[in-house]
Length: 477
Figure 1 (tube, rainbow, N blue to C red):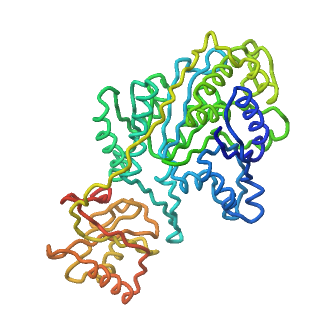
Figure 2 (cartoon, rainbow, N blue to C red):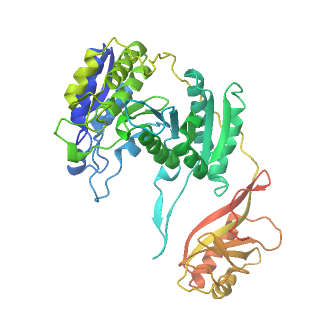
């Protein structure tokens, strides 16, 4: 008997959770339920994270969390509970299977069967944002080697466990050469450890277009957080419906399982919502806790129900569906099919072996050299030549101005008059005489900026690792 933490959520959450639990318990799931409350009521009671400390204790104690969709109130500084839970519990892997149920659910892609594996903790979802000037805000994109190694290795291990033939990586490393470049580099490194599994890399834009047009060309797709969030919803929708897709969030100690859709408050309390997405999450949960026989029984009964044409309103189609049912009636139909297998759709079999990754081992530090600094300045003028004349007053014999960019485009020296500039300027200082740069030289430069009434916003130190510059150049340089 495994104790799990359950949250029924908001909107349609309680209805689809009741249906899901009824099905898996009828199938013989050996679970003990510890229920917590998260979401809208908790937010509106004054907890901006939407979860109380005792609820955290339940999740951390039980290690398994089955969560229905929740509603995050607008405004008020409320934080996404999904993002918070994934980060606090180290749930680094988001796993979203997206497969066709043709001909019983409408899709243009009858052969589609892909799994999107999304990095779950970092990227732009680190949530580090600042307004720096009247006209410019920034969001920091953080990509770490440990984050890349964990999610990419998980993708290959998943493919190995489930008999998948290919792992594809999506990035935008032709533009973001440092961040997405690291993700691609680590993918290539780890792919070499799995010669039995085909690997390939696509630039995200053309890869997304290819996935939307010909998803059967892909098998397992691994990608950074934001891309994975967007494309897993696209994949679920083109497979048939976002309402059919479940999600697993896997960490080294804890795991969370859910539907990928929201709480749909307009449908709340009507007993019409499709519980299939949350049920798919529960099937992944059963596999995770080693109850694979029950997971198979539930999934095959669900496939048989879909095949029988017993459909909720969202996937009901005249001429294909045989009966339109409510949430509770759909659950009863799945229960009636327990022990049966689909005829046209492919029955499932699951393996009980869990995916266990080796602990991350930090590499020895690389030789690291400070080779300059980018100083960001708030300046409301529009002539880069005038700004350069002012900023060159900061040259101190050790560091001198080498370039000014605006929104990443070089505007000095030899900029174009046609380039539109905001009030946010990056001024790059490089060694003036070839001597090593020291941190105190940057402090001296910033002190001179105060003396000359130049408003600095932030600095970014420029480093070379193993003698290789590890920072972006200005576009046009």
